[in-house]
Each structure stands twice: as structure tokens, then as C-alpha cells.
Length: 115
Image (cartoon, rainbow, N blue to C red; front, top):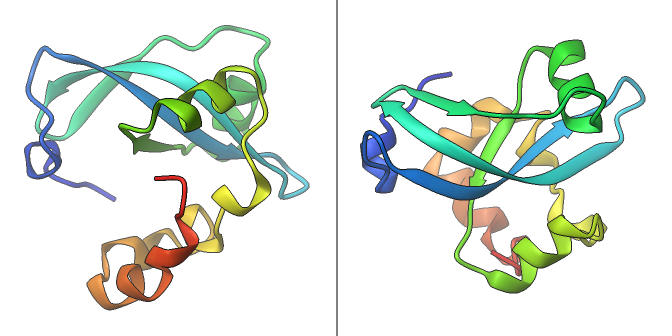
């Protein structure tokens, strides 16, 4: 899936503090704070450490989701590995094609109480 990153306010060359979400082979979801750099309107670059759950999951599934948040509490929870389970709604990864559907997003907006 591609999205024009400028449509969410990202500018080429700037770094953004984000939470990257992934899923392991058993369906367990993981969130990690990762800085990403906007390389162009369809590409980001991030540095993820070898041996991390995040990198293992990305290699396993060949995908990840970049979540942009301005919520310092949620970012701190990601830093200490304590994101509440209800942060990971089903649409986050399994139903990723629905994320671009405005009606679907509006229906689940209340579940994203930490964003």
C-alpha cells in the first residue's frame, strides 16, 4: 500500500518520532518507538536494531505500520514496552486495506483513545 506522505504532513528530509507496529507469527502485536526520516512522498527510512522483535517481525511478514502520534504518554509507553492492548485494534495490521476507507476509520475512531 502506498500513501502520499505529504498528505499526513510529512516533509522530505525531516525526522519524525513514530510508533512502528508489527505482528509475530502467532499474531501477537508489537509496538516500538522508532524515528523515521521521510525520504520522498512514498518512502521512509528507519534504523531498527538487529535482534529486536520489531526487526524480526518485519523480516517475517515483510511489512510494518508507521503510526504518527503527538501523544507523549503513548510514546513513553511504547518506549518502556507497555502499550495497552486496546491500542492494537484489528484494523491496524490484519485489515490494513480498510485503513484507507474513511467510513471504516470513523467507525473505529473511538477505539483509538490513546492517539
